[in-house]
Length: 383
Image (cartoon, rainbow, N blue to C red):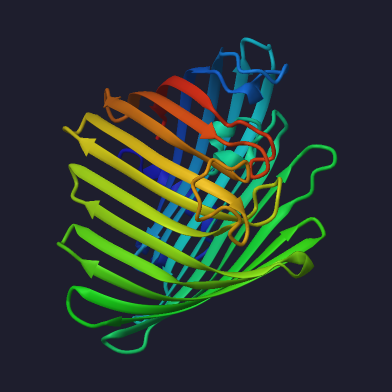
């Protein structure tokens, strides 16, 4: 019965329903405090705007609430980051929150909703490092709604909407938004192979500037084994920009996912249009990333990540040349970490990260994102 009082207390406060429904729903409040010591030489953390390393301390209380029943899975969290920069003496308080819901409406119909919002001064807290290009706070959010249904034993359809937005909280900066509705269908050709088609619309808004793109794609998903799946998507994207700028570019996305318990691996690579950077509207982007997680036992795990990025002005300015043009920004990210779980309530984590950028004129708005980070974290789980 240990810990059961917390579940019943949260259930009584959150789920205003009958005892029968409460008995079928598991409600779990969560609380964790993290302490971090970091060395960071990011120029954005220096008031003089020059690369100069400094030590930092970060204290993060995090609260969460999870709910589960046979048809529902809900996860939510809120975290506050108290960040002290010992070199400059600057102290800031950042805020992060997120929610994800998966609900089975019937045997054939399912809905997924997710969203997160960040109001931060620490670039390391953002899902996209490139949106934090100054020491000013950044307001960033993303969300996704997806409704899927099974038409028959072999055919699935889905319709969804994605949103991403960013606003640098600095005088003269305007918000950047991307709206992405899409519809798709999948046919299970064999037990291992599925074939799909997709239509996607993208609406890019940056201040008063509005640009859009339409894409039609084919897709293939192949299960190499019970733990490994390969997915490929590709097709043309028709771009309609401001001042009559138009063009057609290819969209390609390749994914390999391996989930086997002791060893997980993910790889992604592609070419696409992106927006919501907070500094410009639409960019084309080449990207590739590899991440792995190795669990040696229930206490020790090792993980690593490597990625490459390259982007420029849409629809394809400098995309297919490698001449070191100022129109193109490119770079790489390397990271590794080791985690040791002392017990179910305490864990220690050490990480190192290297971000390097080449080309920072037109495409990067003159900003260099290069940085080196080393951090040690202590996670204390209250419940």
